Amino acid sequence: MKFIYTAVITFFLTGSLLAQNVESYFKAIRKNEALLTAFFQNMPKGGDLHHHYSGSLYAETYIEDVIKNDLWINRETLEVRTGSAKPSKDDWTKFSVLKIEGNLPEYKQKLMEKWSVKDYNGLHLPQDKHFFETFGHFGVANGEFTENDIDYYKNGLLELKRRAITEHLHYIETAFTRVNNFKPIPSLSVYNEVLRKQKNNPTALLATIDSLYKRIEQGDIRACATKHAQLVDRIHQEAGIDDEKFTMRYQTFATRISEPVSFFTQLIGGLMSADLSKNIVGVNILAPEDNDVSMQDYQIHMYMFQYCKQKFPKVKTAMHAGELTLGLVKPEDLSWHITNAVTIAGANRIGHGVDIAYENDVYSLLKRMKKDSIAIEINLTSNEFILKVKDDRHPISLYQEYKVPIVIATDDAGVLRTNITEQFVLLAKRYPEISYQDIKQYVSNSIVYSFIEEPALKAKILKTLADEFNVFESRFGGK
Ligand SMILES: [Zn+2]
Image (cartoon, rainbow, N blue to C red; front, side):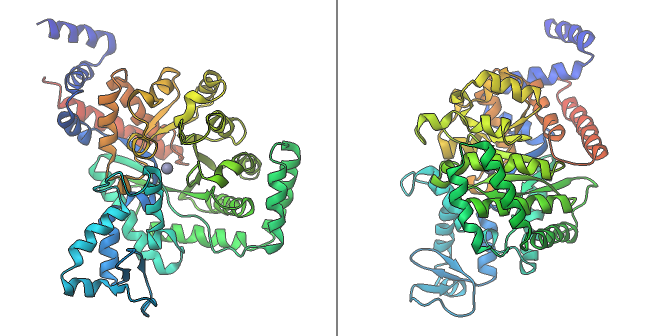
């Protein structure tokens, strides 16, 4: 009786009796993982804005692929290679031979462990190294992006799309491929040293970046970017991906462990490609942030982004920043990466942002992120595995307290053997201060802060989300 009375009062106050019921149900189940899993599996989830193509496919897909194509495998190192001729040493054999020998199941298991965190024993490599090493094993995903690989990419994108629809996502924004195959211009290598010398002198640095930009533009970068954009659009179209019931868009990226000139060329190529393709909506910066080169060149990268924002004002940037924690790098290196991604590079969204509590003037930074609507992409499983940051060591509550727009994402569901549902389960279980209404807000944020360029499409997805939430919540209306 008391419950009904409370619910009726709430109905008059908020206009939503059903929301009260689903909230009560949610409150009652938030410590039970199985009940939460069923709840979130069915809850509409909007978009997954932070994940990587090669890390989102499950290892099973890669294994099926190498078996189907009967590639070479090194029995000792488990390296996999293409090509008709046997690689020189005796250790190499074909997958078809392993099958005849009856050894295929054993090798499948070994590859699964090498290409993902399945049965990870904590001994083989430090966790972050194990994770980033897996990307080195993803053959074609890490290699050339050419017409020969179209089927591979089409199938991969369709796998991601199928899984997303099953999990009641409406949109995914995948860090897909980067512009490559450009011819390096040897005479530009002198810029690497100049840029590094000037990294604490913004005026000189920006002048050098400007001069470098003009030189890079004279090379084949525009042709490579055009080819890249056309290829992404072709794969998107041939895979039959449209905006009818589900939407997919892509990011391209530059890898922060490259030399400055190479990094800048990738960045310019990515921005050009994003400008040309209606399906590429943003540019990111990837690879381990604690790598020596990443750390050394971080400031240079920020000014390169700042410079490029003027050249390509329409292209949005999501930036991995602050994917660091105490113990991984020196304490002083935890104090400025997110700050500079926001204040210098002009990031539209921040990926991870785990070190925020250590940033200089953290409170002003959080206020700025809220004021400028810079969303934070939270990846709970990834942060737990790679950085060992979880529970209340994770800064999600800090972002929540300062009302920075939050979105929930998977990062690398395939490598980490997780999914978007599990991210919401962890969120509900670990952070009791986050309410059902907050979670609904995060779902809505994932469309609002997506880089979808068409306002009408965004509005359409938000309307679908609202309708689906009504249906979802009505299931709990009688309780
Ligand atoms: Zn990531």
